[in-house]
Structure formats: C-alpha cells, structure tokens
Image 1 (cartoon, rainbow, N blue to C red):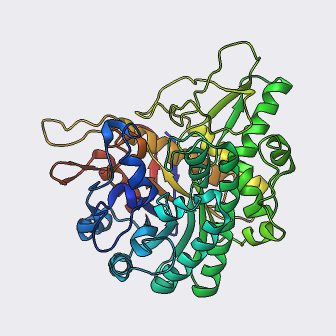
Image 2 (image 1 turned 180 degrees about the vertical axis):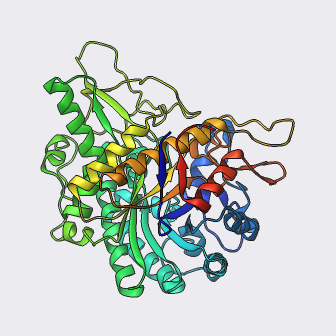
Length: 469
C-alpha cells in the first residue's frame, strides 16, 4: 500500500471554463464569441451541440458555489468570458457582465474559497476575430485593455489571476488544424497566434502587477510529454521538433525571455517570425508566482520514413490539416490502453516525468496542476448514483504521480480537478463527461458522482491511499 500525506497548505480545487458551463449567451449584454460562431456552424461540433445553455451556471452559480463549499475545496478556478464583460473586445465594458463575476468572486470569498480567475479560456469576441483574431498583433493590445478593465473591477478580491488557458490549443487547434474556433487552417497564422498570445500574456501580466500587486500571477499551459518510438537519432529529433512547438514555444518566451532557436529554424519555411518585434520577448517574460500545468495524457512520436502511411494519433481531433506546423516528417503513434472516453491514453508516470522536467529546468518556479481529469461514459445506476470507479482510479493514480514528483523536489502547491461539472466539451458537444458532478442537461439537476465523494474525503484529510478501495 502506498500512501501520501499532503500538508494543510496544499490547495485542493476544481476548475471550469465560461463557455463550457455558463450558457446565457445572449443575456445581459453579452456579445458573440468565436465559439458561438463555431458551434453554430453546421458540421463543426458533435450533434450540432452549442454552449447556448450548457450547464446554465449563469443562473445557477449560487447553487454551484454550494457544491464547491460542500466538497470542502479551498480554491475554484473559473474563467471570465471576455465578450460578457467587453462585448466587442474593445471599447465599452458591460457592467452587467462585470457584476456577474463580482457576485461570483464575493460568493467564493464569503465561503472561504480562493477565487482563481482565468482571463482567457478560448472565447475571443467575434469582432476581434473578424479583424484578424490572434493572428493580428492588435488582438494582444486589446487583451491588455480588457485585462485592465476586469482587474480594475475585481481588484485584489481575486487571489490568483491566470492570463491564458492552454494557448497551444488557441493557436494550433484554432488556426492550424481548425478543430477549435475559429476553425482556420493557416499554418503561418497559427505561428503568429502563438506569438500574439504570448504577448497578450506578458501585457496582461504586467497589468496585474500594476493594478493588483498583492494578487498572484499565473498562466496555464497544456505541456506535452513526448516520447520517441525508439532511441534512434531520427526519432529523438522528432521529439525535439514537437517539443519546440508544443512546449518551448511558450516556456521559452514566458520563462526564459526568448524563443528557442530551433523552433525558429524548424518553421522558417512557414514564416520568418517578423511579427516578433524588438522588446516583445522581454515583455512576455513577466515573472510568475505560479505556473499552471494541465495534463491528461502522453504522446508517442517517430520520424516518418516517407513511405509508410502517416499516423496522426495525437489525440487532438480529426482534421485534414495538422496542428503540428512544419512537422510533416513526424508520425504520432497510437499508444497502448487503457483509454478515456476521449480516446486518450492513461499514463500517470508521464505526469511525474513532466513535473520533474520543469523542476530541473525552472527550479525556482512554483507550480500547480490546474487541470487533470478524465471523461468516461458515466451511467446512472438503479440506486440513482453514478459509480465512476474508473474516474476515481484515474484521479488517484495521477494525484499519486504528482505526489511522487513532490517527494522528489517538485514545488507543486495545488491540484484542480477537471471538472467540477459535466459541461459542453468543445467539438465533442455534450457527449463527453468530465465532471465529478453530473449535470442532467434536460433538467439541469446536479448529482454528485462517487468521484465527488472521494475527492471530498481527500480534500478533508489530505491522505491519498493509492490502493483501490
């Protein structure tokens, strides 16, 4: 039996995203986002599902805060919908939208829960996309303006400000493979989006430092654990190439103050990176109080031999275009199971590996796991309960992997389960359920799954028994 004890200071939380849970997309002055447009475009999402209603959190936020309190969580990570507080992405702010998040933050504080606010979780105002989106530098400047407005409104009541969630997805899935909003398939635009998202992070981070100096500053990255299919030089170079696109394109400018030279060389056939202006990289490298790490599964690659059929089992959705810009000579290989309902492999040791890599490369940088969880095909049993044993096993093993990394010196200070609620799972609509609380989308009734009860006990005791019940 392996047991881990977490200190009282360790943060146990849960996470959500605005478009995935709020609904009320046309209420109280909210403007359209790229995900409203994308989900309403035929063929873009499974079953044509949209986030129009989602989990109706906009109207049920007080009930949902009650669940957070009952779970005994010390922090709640939510996102602010840019088009709800600034409908067009520039100019006028919408007081009704700001008031919603102000009530949410005050409600958390009244319950003794730390508010962890993400400024951007993929819902770019449609007007900004019409003007070029993240491929345009102007969008980063508008993000700075938005950050000043929302940080100024919520001030130091927010414990942690997170600038961006998973800019990798925003850039590559939104602008290269097109499986996320805005659905573009333009490799050069994707790399421009990488930079302008990085720049937006730096500009917004400096706003936080100025307007909320006692708040903590964070960013959340979905860092990839990439392994070679063999120890050949070609396969190891495939890992290097994908690591540059997936990880170092963000870690480099954010934490080192510069883009990696091999990334620029690898992608020179696509762009000359002239959108990076003098001083940008220093602006991006605003010091972080905590680095948010999202982890779900690992990646296996090899060098393509130029003859065999290509393999694109990267877990990021089917498309005729690849998110991996200028990496046409890399194969993404299927991995052994078991798998989640997303088709993602379950690989807890890779989380330990990732956290130890970050400790090695950035030894003074505190971290939190800001998303980790699994979608499974949950069934409501005859007793009315959801016995999601596979989710409990997934969480137990990954939290254990995090504990293993902590025992080896990784400065990981918290864990946020994804997700608090079943929700709109982007291109997969309502078919994939990540929540520890079930949402009946017809009635909006919330029901705790067994995993919620398990997580409640963990948060209360700090004791993790890695032996199955």
